[in-house]
Length: 226
Ligand code: CA
Image 1 (cartoon, rainbow, N blue to C red):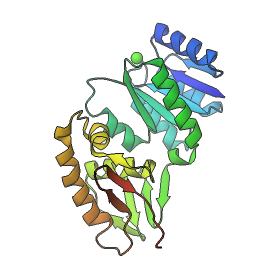
Image 2 (image 1 turned 60 degrees about the vertical axis):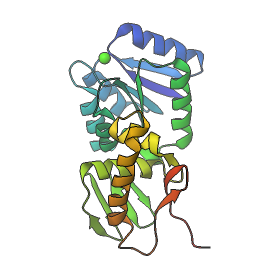
Image 3 (image 1 turned 180 degrees about the vertical axis):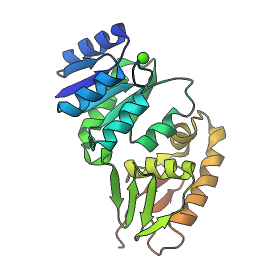
Image 4 (image 1 turned 90 degrees about the vertical axis):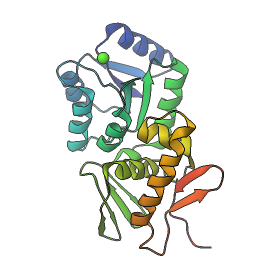
């Protein structure tokens, strides 16, 4: 299992390389954005761990260029705690998961294993669930070949649900991932936006894709009729 760590802080990079190495991964390190992009496009990695704040080219640009080059390797983005828009931006650009610095190494390992289990299909530039198609590079969504007119927030919300299709997502998790809100205060916003999203994604169609799981949250799923 070969992983690429793109991180300019030598101490952090060494720590990751050592820790992941002890867990059976082969780890290459790139010390700036440009080097990271070159390495990620030329060598075959199972996963890329990408810091956002990098010299020569920031992590977002690296991610965008990777996806444009059709490199669909799963990307785990490392963001700063106070970077409010990072999660939404990352979802739009095709990141597969996030970890806020500083993080526990055990948490990083758990995320890496989960991403590797999920495989590469979820990081493809387009995703299809039933007759719903989402293009993460062009920020477009279609249902039954009809273009859905979504706001950036609605697109981020739909992207999150599509990448984790079949998984029930709590309002708290959605609020954290899409609005960077950490408490229950964000859950009403989730309901309001979910209603708007459903009015575009589901209301015009008989077969519903977004489902409410009472007391838990929401799930996007192509359920076969019984
Ligand atoms: Ca950095």
